[in-house]
Length: 150
Image (cartoon, rainbow, N blue to C red; front, side, top):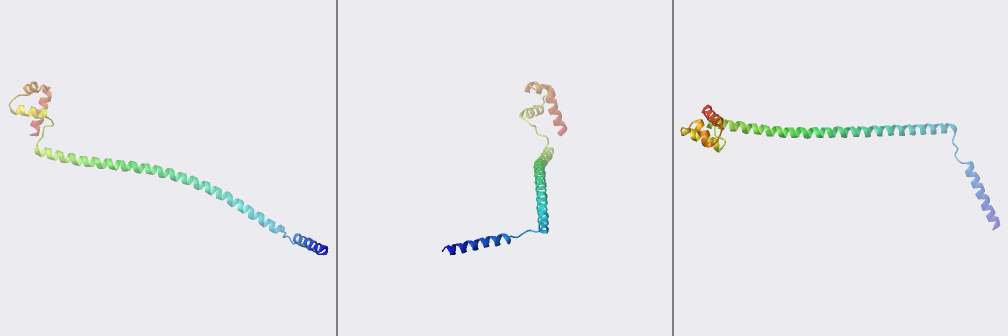
């Protein structure tokens, strides 16, 4: 048994020696290649970091431009809606003008109607003004507009 153990120990020692002697060694040429590859990897990492920073800056710039364009689109849409409202209002105004010019002027309120009815009864501007407790100039204006429209 001691013999067996001693043989096993000798085999283990020989195996360890063989492993240490057979360890792969890197030649100087291989070391130069490894160093150049390490430099390439470092340069690539530096370039990729710069590229990533550049991309982030461009992304921020594009977001700012997009936000500005969104604001301008919203303003343009608001202006288009307002223009449409004004266009519709001008059409309605033109239609009202056409209908009012063909039918003759109509008094806008009850006081104007009273002025016109009293005038038709034969009262002059001063008498109508006293009767309605209105300024004479206002009564004369209403009567003058009626004459122009007729």
